[in-house]
Image 1: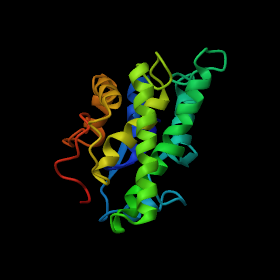
Image 2: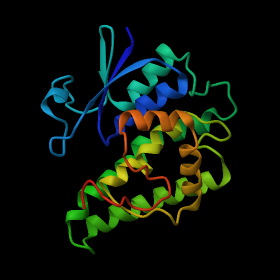
Image 3: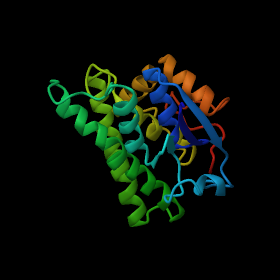
Image 4: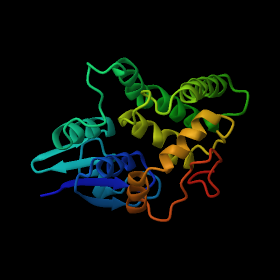
Length: 220
């Protein structure tokens, strides 16, 4: 029985079909439409977290995109796209793999959630400055390296792809000034596995690969 991936349209669960396409792992994709903003009741009922992604692998059912990626890669992909401790780039891989969700995405979510405050509000200003620092850090890394871990494409790139791409449907900022990130997004967009996954997960969705804000944000 193939792995089941429960994917909420326009969400971080896009990472899982992308991973499976990269690793040539068969999977069934069950998609859901937001209702109107969060997950619909049938997706919420799948897991106590009430969010996407959720995967089912026989009797196993887990959520949390990082955990799902780790499970799929190690249970079905022989650990591919994770660098082993013996690899010279392992420390860099380990850092950026965790940084993508723990630092980049959390700072973007905070900046997004505080945009309801007036411009100049101290909390909003601090959040926006923190996100800017993180984007500059990522930009410098990618000006000097092809991928986040160095010369090899890894799950760190899959994690960060959503945070700098599709997530901007909710926080429509222009990141085109970060030329290192934009060049990296171009490399991401050139991967056939990414293209196949996005066409299957979110067919027809504009892929935000040039750093420009979406023409039709999910939220203005």
